[in-house]
View 1: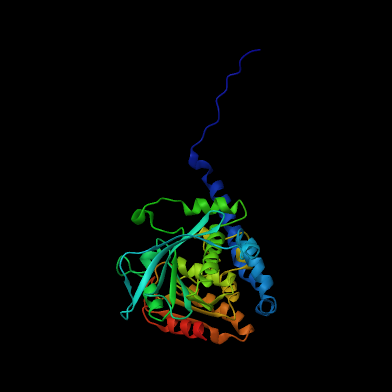
View 2 (view 1 turned 90 degrees about the vertical axis):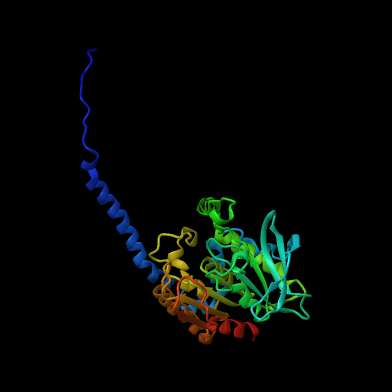
Length: 358
């Protein structure tokens, strides 16, 4: 058999560029069409009247969307949380009015070796009677120490201190969000979230569950009033406040700072997304799960991360769920002249504590 000589075809890589561009455009066009239709699908899936009549059914669907271990929370909530460590922080903590508070670093085993860490702030000498308990939640690149002024002034604008000054006990938990450059201990949040999602979980489900299990332990302590539990947080902390308050009806009042946004057309923050979430539970619908309990929101009009326009739109839709339950007075929005920071003024905290103490 004779050998056949041939010359392979060759061309410049750029020659087929238009075909790739057309394909990419078609993929993005399909995605955009899905995004454009998502709000209508959410409106059909969870109309305000339907949520008002079956809030627990929708809450179960919400927890199922986020994944394990939230799906199984009810089955284990009576299993005691183990306190692994309770260590005094050297020195004392003074609030803005000069009151003295003790600080204890707490480690809790909340599920088969999954543990939560946080700092508990209490009046020096303890509480004379059960007092309100508020979760003070740090945001992205943060820690409990950062939102509690351990390193000086930050964009949290004294979050923990301002809660303490209102007469509440505070627990500030750590989430998988610290800045590796500042604090070390490297991790890959997105990779961990993807790995959890392929197993029916998510980093949000795990950490919301962890906060709820912290509440299980805290609410059973003699210093805590289990009927007056609140949560407040900035940025990612505001996101976790929204998610946890929607999941846990023990939270009487919630305060989201610079985090109630419309994710419909956003393709970043993949840990704020779950299978089919934009067709079912967007931020407005999740806020609706908090109704009729108190929910307040702030947004800086110069926020370079999220802005305020999306917050105003999302809040307006969330308010429809409150209206359907006759609770319009229990939802509040403040757009302030500021950046990506907790509002320095007290309007939201006034609303928050008024509702928390009722």
